[in-house]
Amino acid sequence: MAASRSWLSLACVLSLCACQSEDKPSETDRTSADGGSAADSKLGPEFDLPPLRGVTQLGLTAVWGSSKDDVWIVGSDGAILHYDGETLEAVASTTTRSLHAIAGTGPDDIWAAGEEGTTLHWDGTRFEFVERIEISTLLGINAIAPDDVWMVGVIPTDRLGFVRHFDGVEWTNARVPGSASLWEVWSSSADDVWLVGTSDVQAGLVYRGDGMDFAPMEFEGKPLRGVWGTSADDVWLLPYDSAAQHWDGEAFTPDADYEEERGMLGTWGAAPDDVWAVGLHGRIKHWDGEHWTAADALIDQPLWSVWGAASDDVWAVGGVGTILRWNGDHWRVFATGDESASSPLTAAP
Image (tube, rainbow, N blue to C red; front, side, top):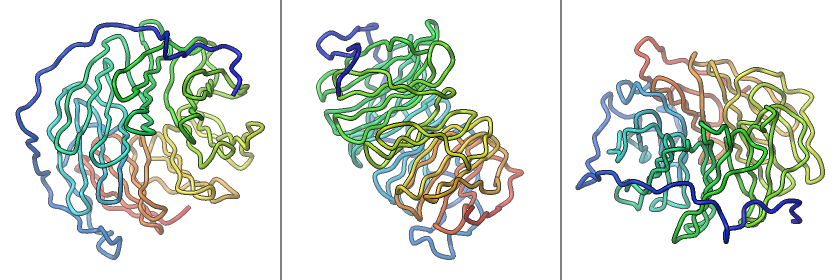
């Protein structure tokens, strides 16, 4: 891919600041969550059990897993939760700073990051504190391979997008010209990496690169909060408050059926005809290959992130310990820190 302006060359990136160390716990120290567990690994009738309560009342901001039996969730104040196919537990964290993103390449190679550039790594036994870059906030992670990890975010004081890359040995950092913030990173392959966010004129921003050199794409739309696709020519972009746009390899096209709603925050899909988007007030939308349709909201909390192990096993997480789960037929409140929440269900949109 030709780049009109090569701003990220890993041979000459801009180092932002010295990293700091933090105390690390001497052992993993997992703490079981209150409220029991739902044995729903087969997604049968037991899937409709009442929601777990007391797991956490903290806001949950990101979800990712290596399989249906290895799902990780992070959130405010360094919160980390793990689901092993039977039990949802709080896991000992090595930071009290809020975490905004999590992703990995497998059960023993997982990255989490967030406030003040705090970066943690799971090696299969514990989350080790890696480093902190205090001037930044990290918002998105894409782990292509153990030696090819991308993180994006913002330098709040400068209102400037920020990108990091790990080559298996060291991290390199760069400011992104023309950006006010970067919210998400996605890739179809190691040499096709997408960065999306907000431009310095408060419009949507898309950078695309081969892992070394990046250039802005021609995009007309509002600030972007999410990106996901199945290939280099099948990519969905999720604006915060306008219609989702689709890239077919040649151009971006806003979806005519997408009812514009303010406050969409995250997207993920299982296939070209099976894509989810979530947002404020428990909003959930689904693309079936022809139309975007909305599901009835289960809970009046922001949903920040959505991820799935399969088309019939999808997770969404949000405010006050909210965890929703989809079984291929309906969404269920899997866990909640809101004691007033009931156990509603909603069918497919």
